[in-house]
Structure formats: structure tokens, C-alpha cells
Length: 430
Image (cartoon, rainbow, N blue to C red; front, side, top):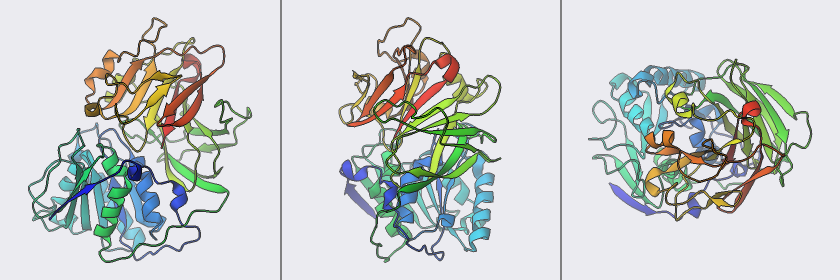
């Protein structure tokens, strides 16, 4: 069966965490869901989807993301760890099966996992999102009911109908949006819950929001045990800290998890992450205000030069006279002609920097050494066909000033930290 769904861009936006109904009781009888991310991504790909499923009565114990190293041997290398995670979830929830969701490279992992009949018996239904074509439904004999969701505007993976699966073709969604959109949630919910009516969604009324997450390395998703997370409330007009002492200091556990912590809704925060390892500088995260509970606030550190991602980022300067900034759009790519991204008024969403085929999710802004801004792509990032790019952009580290970032009418202000002393700053747009 094949269905074509046109999707308005506004409907595909991230649903705020305030969608979690206040005081609603969850249903432990619902089948747990395991979400698997794609290449270079992490579990926070599904932050919006977890909020949406929570709003429909799913318990926190029944919603899980699986972080894996997409640079370390491909899907086959991760099968054993995924199986271990699913076994743990089944034991803890006393469920007979889980639902499994795989996006992009995670779809390859999903099919590889389900190719074994014993493993396939642990999965009730499987959702294949923005991933490669397959000869039939998942399972050794195609026995696992499969939902295949893809977008005709996905220019990274060319999806098509899978024989025997329920096929849903979206319109207007880029490769990342097809995993994060509300329209995708609607289709997944109906597939997992045939005939079940939706609950009325109520907004949270509490002044504070429960926040927690994980500290991992970019790309490899290696847990950063013992990492220190310092949280500062900010002046929204400048991005500067309101006080010198952090509001709270949290420590990542052996698996990189930190929190929970109670954030004030509507407040801008900085999350400063320090691993304490020799030679590793802090990473400063600047986020839009939390509107509700979010258990998937991921803070990525930069891997060492010995890793594939580390080699790519080795060119980031550590100079006292300039700032290094990264912009991460966490629920959709930045695409020329559709999106508008600027830094201090300079257009970063040009056809040269953000063509549709590039599907830019993260952009690193730093100078090439001449103290000038040309907005030319950095050569070392040209090896990346998708997702990451680097731009020649000079931001002096003195005197103290705000770097103003705007994405589609929303603004984040970031201080001009010295790259030599304070590392990289990351502006995260939901």
C-alpha cells in the first residue's frame, strides 16, 4: 500500500515539550519504542517524537533512543549492542516485544537487526524512515510489519516503495525533517496503535521544566564519563551570563547521562561542558528557552584527532584573538531559498553554502587565518557531501561582544569567547 502526504513546512516544525500533558497518567501496557538515529547523529534526533509519544500516554520507561557509532564499522558492528539494549528494555518493562524505528543509516541497522529470526521475534512493528530501498518487509522472511516513510524532497537518500510494506511518501520534508516532523509522528502513531484514538494534548502549567540528557563525542557517540556540565542563566539580549557562578553544576555518570535538573521555562541558558581531559577545551551550548520537559538534551564534545570526526575538526583554530562558533539546527536542515540563517547580519544561507543537496544541519564558523570574513566554504569540509559544512567567518574575541544569530526569525545571542581559552560555542535552534 502506498500513500502520498503533502506536508506544510509549518506543520513539520518541532513540537515544543509543553505538549506533554500535565498530570496525565501513562499507560505501561503500551508496547515500548526504540528509536535508532542515522549517520553522524545521536538520540536527540527524536527529542520531538519522544515528547509527542509522551503526550499520548507513553511512559518514559517505554521510550528509548539507541546511540551508536555510525563511523565505527557500520550497522553490523552495532547489532549486538542494539540487541542487548532491547533485551534490557523487555526485562525492565515486562513487555513481550518492542517497536523499532530506524532513520537513514539507522534504517540499515534496523533491517540488519531484523534479518535474524530470533531477533525479529522481539519486534512487533518496524518503521523505516528516510532510508534505503529494500526488497521486502523487515524480518528473515518479511514477517515484521513494516512502515516505510520517505520524502520526495529528501536529496540525501532516494527512497521508494518497499514491496509488502505500508509505504508513505511525504512532500516538502528534507532528509532530517522526515525523522523529526509532526507528520511523521502521526503516521507512526497510527501504525503502532491501529484504531486507537488520540488523547487531547494539554500544555504543562508548571513554571519549571525537567531537563536531562547525555554528554557524548560528536560522531562516535562515546560517553564522556565524569564530564562537568555548568548551567548559567543568560541575559537574552546579549547572551552574557547573569552571574559568574553557575545556577547548577551537574556531573555525567559512567554512561554520559546527566540530570535531571529543573530549568525555568522561557529562560535562555548556557551549558558549559568540560571533560577534564588534557588538551580538551570547553564547549559552550546556547539553546532556545525550554517550554517543557526534555530528557534528550545532548551535549557533544569534540573527539580527538585520532577519530574520523576529529580529523575533520582538527582545523578548528585555537587562537586567542578570535571566536569559533557552530550553528546546529536540530529539527531541520538549512536550505537556500527555504530558510534564512545569518550571523551578525551576514547571510549564511546562500546557494553556495546551503544548497538543497547539501542538507546542512551543522555549520562551523571560523577564520582561515587572514582575519577577514569571505563566507567561502572551508576546504577541509568539502569532503562532506551532506550535513556538515565550514565557513570562513572572522569574529574577534575582544572586546567582549555578542554574536547575533538568526534562523527563520528566531534569535540566539552568543558571547565572543576566545577560542584559545574557551573552545567552541554552539548555538542550538530547535
